[in-house]
Length: 308
Ligand SMILES: [Zn+2]
Image (tube, rainbow, N blue to C red; front, side, top):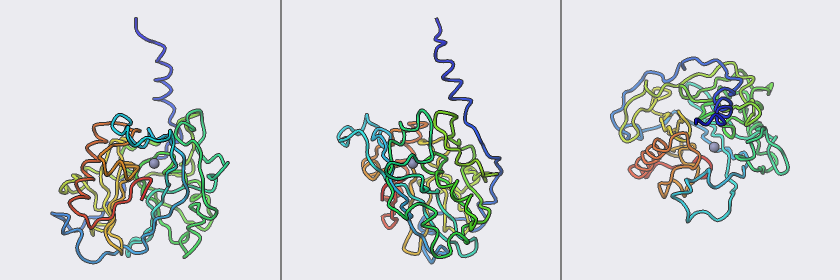
């Protein structure tokens, strides 16, 4: 006899992602130089300035989400751990200033609920903490950043990476923003289960198509966003369906932002993919490619999704 009991759950999981903005192909990548090697990319001066890691707080998460428990038994001490939540600020000489991911707003912090709610929310974010003045808007309040911000490049559309968006779009000093995500990347906003409505006031997502990129050594299809080798979107599916990592040539040197292809340092250094995955084989091969890249180019600084 077939198991019909699972049907309602399947329907729920397949039908209730809500509040999806319209999607259009991005104007990026700009056409430009065709690179044959990463050596070519990594040399010379960069048009990027002001690269800064904005540490916007910490979330308490199950360790089994960060690391595949089957392969990482020796790294498990407690059941949960606090991990950093970042947004990355940078400016490009010709295209202006952007964030990569959006950080946490001030709804997070000790004893606060945060802005992801629903029956399953506490299975992902158990609690949070945040030093006063480190929420995303406070960190954009200096250096005329609010006025200069042009948009956000997302690694993926999970709640801890989109949580700063409501604060950004409702801030009067911030102009209309453009939001970039990989083509087909799912917006995780499940009615009643895991709901933040973070993109409720976002009219449009600009989709970056990794298949339109250059086939680069080790990392495969990569998008040279500004056409000058300064910012690359790297297709690293697995944790989410169309996850992106980024390589950015900052004034202090090239930096690889793994995003949640590797949440943690211990995962990266031991080749252990995240526990939370959309596709385990893809998560593993994406992680192994990033590790090989980092080993081949040790001059590249690596910042993990939730640790540096
Ligand atoms: Zn994350």
